[in-house]
Length: 324
Image 1 (cartoon, one colour):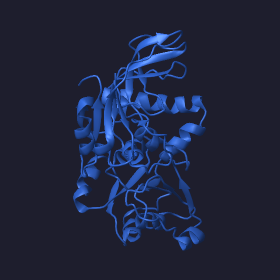
Image 2 (image 1 turned 135 degrees about the horizontal axis):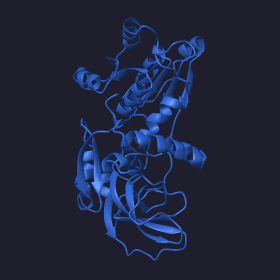
Image 3 (image 1 turned 180 degrees about the vertical axis):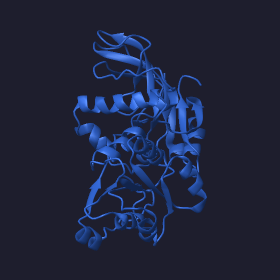
Image 4 (image 1 turned 135 degrees about the vertical axis):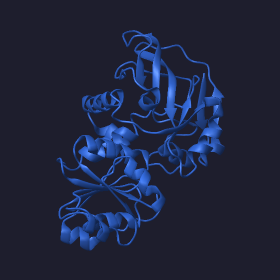
């Protein structure tokens, strides 16, 4: 089998390498899965660079999510041929993975690429929309990074619930593309963002979702209604994020953070299962979709990583460890 690893932190397309490993015999209670698709996520790139919230010992395997197929089981388990979520710990950038049989999540017959991206982006979008505020139809939310995979999924999930989405972009050229994804209003980020929002919306947003941080965080906070909530889950700007104290104090704004890894660690398995069940149903029905720009064979992982780190992509970059 082939496995992607990194022995030192650095630029992903320079430090990741493919190694050959001999698969070990299964122990009782284990299942071997063949990896069919696995995405390259920003969190993978950040972890390889050494800037993630938690770091494994080196050398480390990589690949936070994917979809696989059961090819061997020792003891009770799922049937051979069942498609499953590739479970943590990381290691999905490989041709095979040996995992505990208990807790494997079977998947429906649906688009492989979409199933491969189930854990990180759809779950993040779902939880950002449902975990912090009890939204009702007609409410406004506002989000930065609207062109990202999470931003597009937030819009899709909000639409299904009758929640209105104000999306914030960083350039005028992105406005039409974001409108095409279903956003109810689109604004260009800048010092007058709060004024734009107050002028164009019939009421202030109750929830702000931010992956940019820095100055954008403060401007989104200024857009919220009294007692609104802002959730920070990324820092695409790389800037320090000052909390606008006067807005927080006088408008009673709640500031929250979200990290999917922590949610997975601290949430009961049955609750995690319910979230993934709902998301897989939406994917199977074609109601939840993330654009894919290109799928690479695992042997071309360095080209795939270089592609994934480019800006202005139109979709995700995926790996097909066992062929396209």
